[in-house]
Length: 109
Image 1 (cartoon, helix red, strand yellow):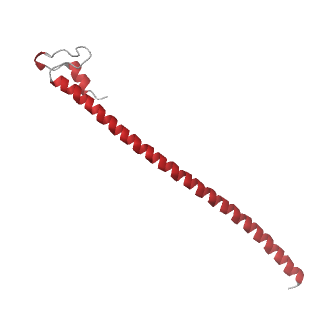
Image 2 (cartoon, helix red, strand yellow):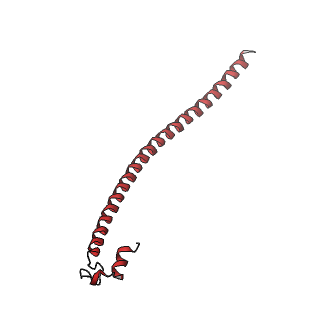
Image 3 (cartoon, helix red, strand yellow):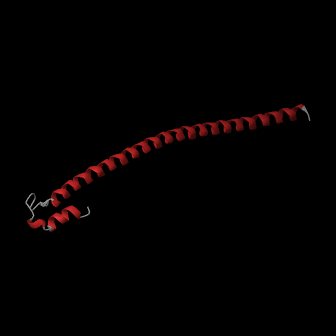
């Protein structure tokens, strides 16, 4: 192998090495972007989980409050008073059932 061939091979190797180095740098940048996006998504996921937990707690509290209110209205009805819009507060004769009150108390909405 003469000097010229050796220099040509060295130049070729150097160019290939530079191309490989550029590809490696591009890959490093892409991996860095992926890591940053992953960290951002983890933080967003954590925030969403906390928000979801808060919404669940609020919903449970709302259901408890709603249930307490319904129980109170039912107790008024059981004491013999109307809870419907038409006869609200009036005494029910012989505690007979009122279709309007029953609709209000037991209809599913």
